[in-house]
Length: 160
Image (cartoon, rainbow, N blue to C red; front, side):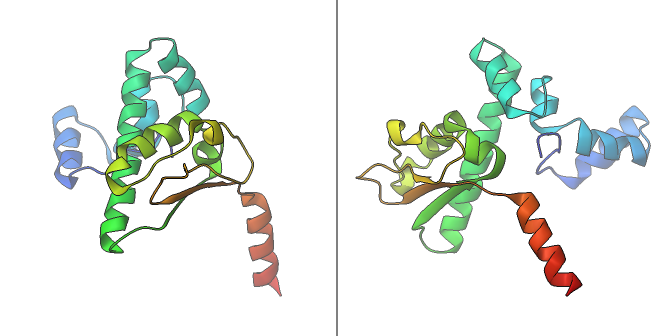
């Protein structure tokens, strides 16, 4: 979510609460509704708005995207270590499905794992496609999602 804090040392929460005299309810709001990409950029939870601001020179928006991209790349790298390798990276939903700039920035940080994307193939939004280059050691795909359909199917399965 674009407004959540992400990883942080748990001691930070009580430190800020005590220092700023913040109630648990206010701290919950800060961590879940006023942090993350939104909190850093000061723009929006919508990555399209944050990207537009960053491209027009907004330093906070650029910082928010840089942190987001590094964080995603870091999680992918952690998974690769845990699995002792990686064959495929799949981008889906929201930013993954419709964010060629973010996919490129994330994959550039994963070049150490042999990830390479083709800029022309990466220029896709909302359709299933392989975006890795021919010399990439890891296949990279964009796969659209239909969350509403999946929720409906699961609901139907549970009701039966």
